Image 1: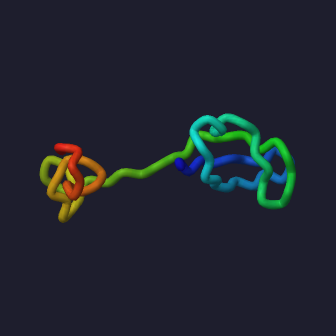
Image 2: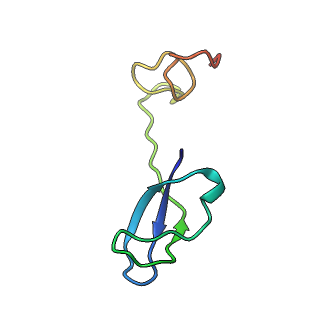
Length: 73
């Protein structure tokens, strides 16, 4: 299940919740119990370690698994 980020309009708490994709846009209860928290766009940071920037140090493949799967990358 994917991890989504939600924000409560009442207490302004931001929290993460594991949910099925089919429920990702449905309102969620915040950790303090308020109903109606909505999903927000999560920000991520990416960093390149020199070279072409195509992979992380020690990664032998081009996918997120580091080449340890059968995805062909």
